[in-house]
Image (cartoon, rainbow, N blue to C red; front, side, top):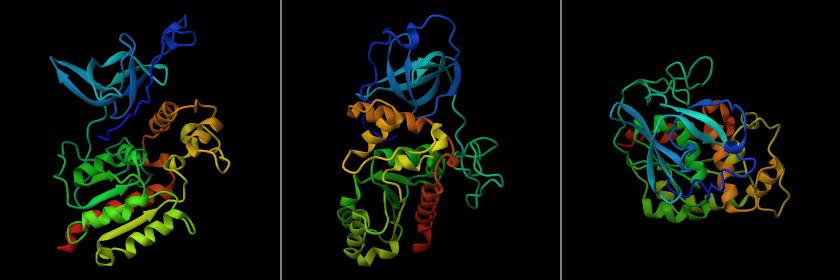
Length: 309
């Protein structure tokens, strides 16, 4: 699980005008699987938290929610929750899935979460246990990147024993490589935002690799063209025609939220906006190929570390 403030202080007066609980009349409830990372609110108590896990106790299913302070609390699955202000009934999540032995085959009709497939489209085998973590790693720039990779490829990564770590920006790549000392059985795959010709990111990556020439065979850096990983979510997934264009000099995420007509005045608004974006993603087809193809490449690279021995 990725730590950090996932909620941005989501809360407020739920009985105020405009709150879903203040509206008279019948409100339709939607069934929503209690997937890890989904931010929900318990109607009775007002507790807001991200789903950590679902467990059984006394013959019933409980969902464990973690709030922005790291505190956890359990609630019975079923009705009585809100997601993005809409009433939902939480259901047990899809059973954990693993990839079939011998590779990560894809469905001929494309990726999907159902029909014995993981969210990334890999063939699923029920009941497989997570593998002990490899020495190799996948590095991403920040929390949002890590959460998105976990959302789509989490089942695959656990079965393969691959850990995804944030390095807080490509500025730290050279120092992280020196500290990690890549080598046989310790490969590093790095995903970089906005890795296009002439950018700061391209220059920093080149400098980092030049500073570690002896480990070049054990390091793979790939990048996508998007300013931020948010843009790697296909607009149709959010039911928008395109991502807003942000004027140069304006903070990008706040500018995007403003362009979408979403709250954008504070860091809490940014956190809520990201959770809304992340919640729209369920399968790899919800992402642009410029990102998903690069993540697939990194997974194949780091899981090939046995060839180093």
